[in-house]
Image 1 (cartoon, rainbow, N blue to C red):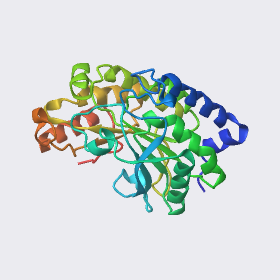
Image 2: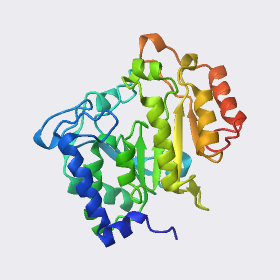
Image 3: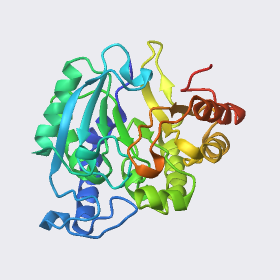
Image 4: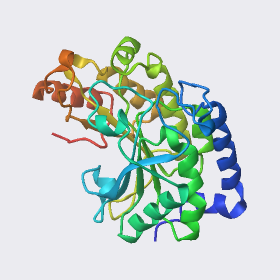
Length: 299
């Protein structure tokens, strides 16, 4: 039997409620991400991400297209939230992340979605783009726990996180899954309006790994806890794959689980082509040359 997630103990000791209060307070002068817009979201003000004080949910379902350790046999209980603190010009979920298409839900309703996905047999609750909604998500946990939630929580994000917020998530999140996007600040500024992204994401990886360590997978092949890194290979080497793989292998862990993704789709005029087989093979070679070996094809 898998161990209970640590958020259960935090709830039982009262620490979870303290974390919820601290996170909610951040909404008064929003500093949930590195942009630190300092708008009062509790009073209806909107910052860069355009998210308000209420959760907005796009969909919730058992997802079988995620990484194998998340999917297992019964799927990953995936909840897509709207809006985003990045403005990636090639975003595949533009209607959700940029336009905010979804429905407003309370934290109690969010809790019931979590429990329903667990009841369907999902191995985890996989929350996509949670960064700008962390207080509302964590506020859902006590109600979800009281209704039987016992599966790991996955923080499925773009890597542009606040280390201050991450420290408040210590012991709450079981699996961190950042999408590590760029190594070059000029590229990050041009394609996501985030010139500090390369610096921020390195600190973020350090903090995530400090909390949960390398990805731990059960005998049944299901992820229980740890860091799972995604990296999207882009045309013309714009993602800076070699530099990022070197950093992960030498500064995080050579045992890091890295999903090197080839599914870039043309969306933006300057990047209007798929990556080539050669570009993807070169990305894999970069990772292997640094000693990384988990999360991507051997051939």
